[in-house]
Image (cartoon, rainbow, N blue to C red):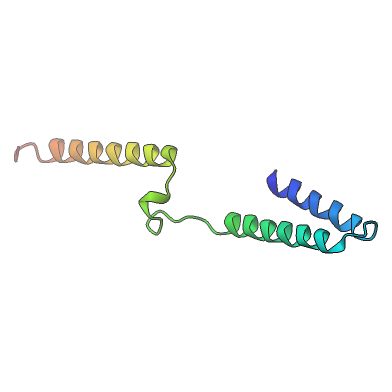
Amino acid sequence: METEVVVDLYAVLEALQGVTDNTDELEGYMSSISESVDAIEEKVASPRLFLETPLDEYTVTEGLLLTIVICMFLKSLWRFVKEGFYWLL
């Protein structure tokens, strides 16, 4: 959605380039919009891998989900050890 809006603004400014006399300001807007589009495309194109992402880059929701998944894994591992090796405990 954001990419479409930015691209639409870019198309409008590109169409207005021949109409306005203030081309320096218009070129500045166009370059900033094209940089924004490039940044959005780069962000969308590069996935965040689990083991390569630092912990401080996770959002609260991602951190909560990660904590829940780790707790579920540890609980199932403990259940496996408890039932599989009951004679050790």
